[in-house]
Image: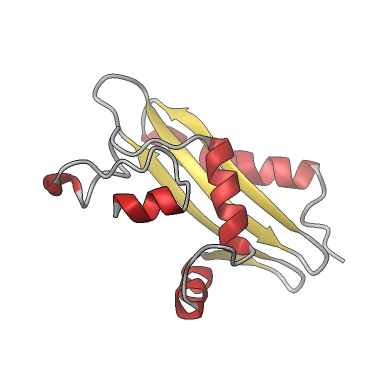
Length: 136
């Protein structure tokens, strides 16, 4: 798994020990910056990773989170837990429009679960601010 993540240039590509295979993306094991997320998601959206067409199709379908008649938002939320520092909430994905795509990777400090909705709200506010949802 680590070799695959290295091949995708995905953060530090650390999956940890065998007992972390179901949690490495939730704890402090796998680390990735928002910029690295944007770079990875851009490759995923443009189908420039070494994945099968079936995998691209499944990822696209799984990631549909919102849509209108002119755009589709493909996104995921995430939460990285740390015993040593503030938890971090993620909102990542891309907005597909007929004329352009907008890739989003945002993280915020998560002091508690009251901040859950802020991940998507902040990302959508930025996309609205740049008029990304005004697809032609």
